[in-house]
Length: 321
Image (cartoon, rainbow, N blue to C red; front, side, top):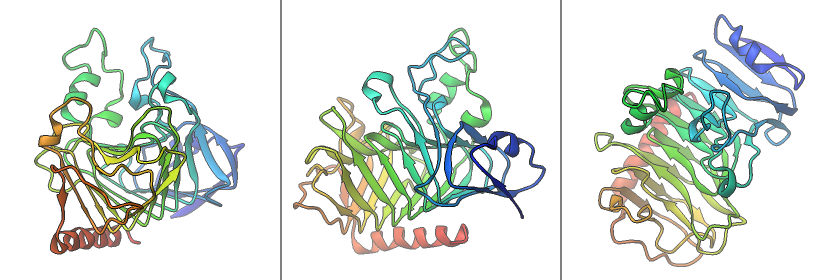
């Protein structure tokens, strides 16, 4: 695989679009004010230094698009990945909007591919920092304009929206920052040795994960050996997860949490009954104070936790870590 070295003066999208085969794009340190989409399979983007190599953009949900419609959540990304087997390493992806209460959701990274991996990345935004497809079925219908052509008219490209089957994502030693639902979607995803940083937010409650897995999916989000860090969130104000759709699944195994984590650990999603179908669990969770988990989550036993740990190890090996 050949390597192409770029600087902030180069147009990353133009380079990606010109590839005829997989390649490594090496990003020299600096700030890249660019919105990019990685469509070619097998591409690697590697930064010179995680904290000083930054790809950033500032779209937000309530912004009006050129088509006259609002961006909504899923067109706000700074980086979108649709090519299978893409790997990102050693740089920061940022959505620069910092007031989601006024402007709405602002995605940093959207992964819309069947396989994806990341190492030593920093993902920075506020609400909805990281999305991992596939989409919930009802959103495919809505955003593809299948039943409401007069309003949506298929305003999202199919390669960003419609992905049949399952997907697998792996994140190693990454820092993911946000406020509300900042890790969300329907992928089977493993987060190993990551820092999940809950930033300050004027709302009373915030949430790390918002899964929407179907009942047919055996695996959802697995956070293993991660640090849940307070980055300005109020004491006891942050929940580990809430179900974006029925049957959403997230487990937290051998993680360490600051005092910003709410004793209940999990939330039901407003006034819905999704807590009755949510599949949330924890094991070996070290909290600043003894938690008092909701009665509809599950404390995993050792064998169940080991099964997830083994799955994480197999996934790590599959992606060559």
